[in-house]
Length: 562
Image (cartoon, rainbow, N blue to C red; front, side, top):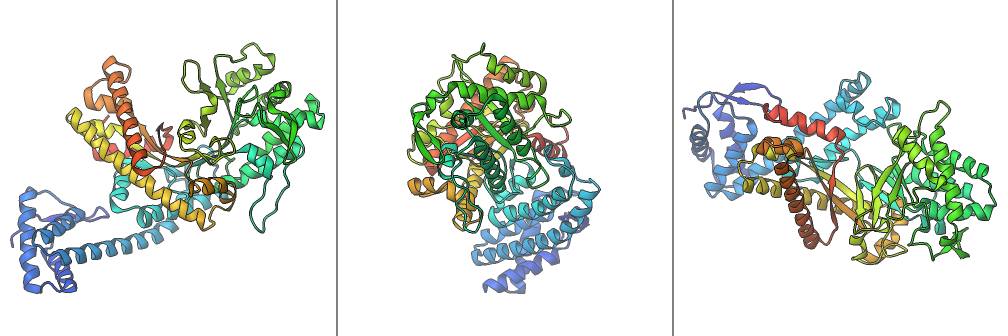
C-alpha cells in the first residue's frame, strides 16, 4: 500500500527509509505465536496500519520507531486480536531488553574514559565528591544501578517519565533508601554492634568512646543509604559524659576536635565525607529532660535535665573547633549542625556566640525557625539541606522508637516534579492541575514500588546495620521502613509561573497561585497516606543537578520554554 511516510527516526537518532515489509514481518511473527493468523492476515493488518499512519502524519513528517510500534499495538487491539497484541508487546519488550543489555555493556566501557577525561557533566554532579579512583568506581557502578532501577524494577510509564524529564527520581545510583535519622539514646544503650562476624562495641562509658562509636556508626550506616545520616539531641545526650569523666574545657575540646576531624574524612563511596547532620538542643530536650542519663548502657540516678552547664561547655567547644577548621584553616563541611530557634532562645548566652560567628564566617548552620510556629523542635527531625520530617505524623501512628516514634525515621526516596514543563504545556488552570495530578500519581507509584523494594532488600540482609537498629520499628509496625516518609518534591515554580501566566513568583498573582499549588499538592499527599497507610511529605527540592538535568531536557524538547 502507498505510504505517505517516507522516512522514520531510529532510536539512535538515525533517519532511515520507511519499510512496510518490516511491520508486516513483525505482525506475522506475533500472529503465528498467538495462533491467530498467517501471512495474508499480517499484510491486511499492515495495510490498515499504513492507512492510520497516513491520517496521523503529514507528508514529510518523520515519526519515530516507538510511535509506529504504538500504532501497531493499537490496531491489533482494535481488530480484537488480543493474543496477538500481547505477543507483539512481549516481543517488543524482549527486543528492548536486548537493546538495553547491549547498550549497557558498550556504555559501561565508555564510562571509564568519560570519567577520566571529565567529558560527562555527571562527573562533577556532586560537589562533595572528588575526582579519584573511588569516584571512578562509583561513577561506573552507579550507571548499572540506574539501569537496574529503570529497566528491572520500575514499569514502562515511570521509566518513560524519568527519561523524558517529566519528573526526576533521585538517587537512582543507590539500591537503598534516601536518608535516615537514628536514635542516639538507643545507640548509647546498645553500643555499635548487631551484625554477625563484625566487630562489636560495648555501650560507651566515656565521652571519647561515645564520639568514636558515633563516628564508626555514621561511617558504616552511611553505606546503607543514598543521602544524609542524622542524629538529633546530640548535645543533650552526650553532655553528661563530661561530668562523669571529670573533663575540663580543654579536654572536651580535644574530644570534639578528634570527632570533627574524623567526620570530615573522605571515607564514603566516591571519595567524599559522609553527609551527616547533628541537631543541637542548646538546652536539655523536653523529650529527655526527665529521662535517666545513660552511661555504659545503664541508666543513672541523674536525668538529662540536670546537665545544662555541661551542654554549654559541649556546644562552645564544638563551635570553637568548627571556627578553627583544619590544619589549613579549611572549614568542616560535615557534620552540619541544625539549631532550633524558639521564642525562649538564649540569644545573650556567651557560650553560644560561636553559633553565629560560624554562620557569619562559613554559613555553617541550618536554622530551624519555630517562632510563631504551631510545631515544636521535638516534632521535627532535620535530615539534610531541605528535608525536615514532621514527627507528628509518626506520633499519630504510634510505636517504633524509644519515646513514641521520634527517632529512627527518614525518607525512602524523593521524586521531584518538573513544574516549568507543566506551566509551559498547560492551557488552562484545569489542565494545569490535571497534569500535576497525573505526575504526582506516577511519583506516588514510584515511591510505593521503591518502598516495597528496599523492604525486601533489608529483609534479605542487604542493609545489616539498619536491620539491627530498625528492629523495634519492624516489631511494632511489621515493616522496617514504616517510619520513613515518601517524599515528593517540586522545582522551578518561578519558571512555571512565567510559562503559565507570565507572572513571576514575587508578584501577588504569582504568589497566590503558588500557594494554591502547594495546598493542592499537600492535600493530595494526605490522600496518598490514606490510600497506602504510608507517610508522605512535600519537599522544596535542593535540585542542584536535578534542575540542570530537567532544564536541559525541557530546552531540548521545547526550545522556547523558560
